[in-house]
Image (cartoon, rainbow, N blue to C red; front, side):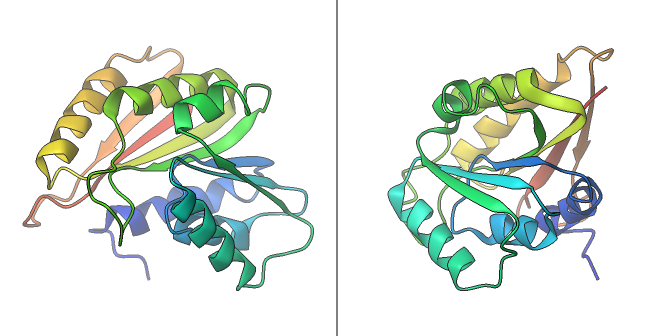
Length: 191
């Protein structure tokens, strides 16, 4: 059962629905690969998954995790060692994306000084929006429990609030009765 007070788990409800028909899926912050593994296990035949991360450690961790699990042979995986804004602007500029995900902050178990930057994330979202399929989805998990994470979430929230309503549905999900500023979820859908 999915815990509705956990943003990471809650977004799985959205992912599960999209993965039934997704052809191209982008994990813009692949980290240790857990989200990418979840998506790969639900990918349909012919789906292409991309894992992007600025840290080579994250790419290596993700590759190892996916290789050690049974991933269907009829889906493809590509890893891109780059910042998500540059990867989406350059390597993925011609892809039509059905689902793009972001798990912001730092790589668990590594240097907490290497974190996502709000304006790079916004640039990556802008690039992703250009290539998002009709009814395509972007999910973003933000972590307001640190000073940097709170700032990033506030900047992100301001940007997302200004997206054109006629073009995008934008939602913000947050736990209401939880302590310690738990992660929050943003969901964007192209109309």
